[in-house]
Length: 247
Image 1 (cartoon, rainbow, N blue to C red):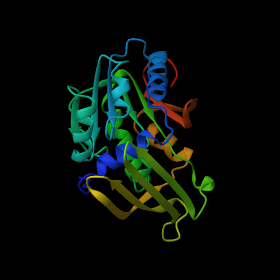
Image 2 (cartoon, one colour):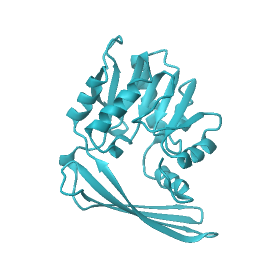
Image 3 (spheres, helix red, strand yellow):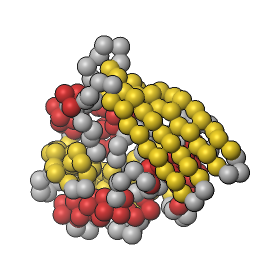
Image 4 (tube, helix red, strand yellow):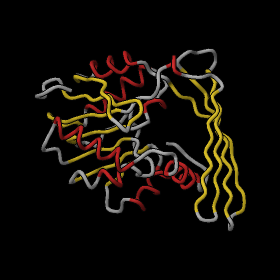
């Protein structure tokens, strides 16, 4: 289980809300994508839902939504945003909710998998939670050739009297050409708590399109990569091989 220092999910949530992602527009795009393929879709599972930034808007498009995340702390934050929504602690590589959904979505989580073996396991578990006409949507990230070694990213967020600064620096990991290590430093200044800061590293995998295609095929799904504004890198959309209509 992922464990974060006290207060980190709140800081994460604050940064993600100000990063430029249009969560209402992304939720609406997902709903259109799903209903184009399955017009009667009523239930949705958001895997790696984090603090519920998409669930908050997805629940206005689907009759029943459920969230899963590896971190109980993230889910505690999500519970305050989407009260009444079923939330489960779970690892996408081992997921077993004993339930099936008309739509399963997994947004910006796949890069945290370590290799194609883990990608295969995760996709298989996501596929296991689809109804016979279900739709799976997975958000990819950029491929290895698009990575800029030494890339520096920065965020500065001010909300009322609170200021958060986040800096990250990314390099190839141990000479690999599909794995990167991102070092992240965050400073959080609050009138009551003062200044808190921490530094940590996250290792990420840059999967290629052929890795996704192979994983979906091995899970018995028909898949395609589609442009899906406002998702910058598009979405992989997959359906059970016997489902009517194209992926």
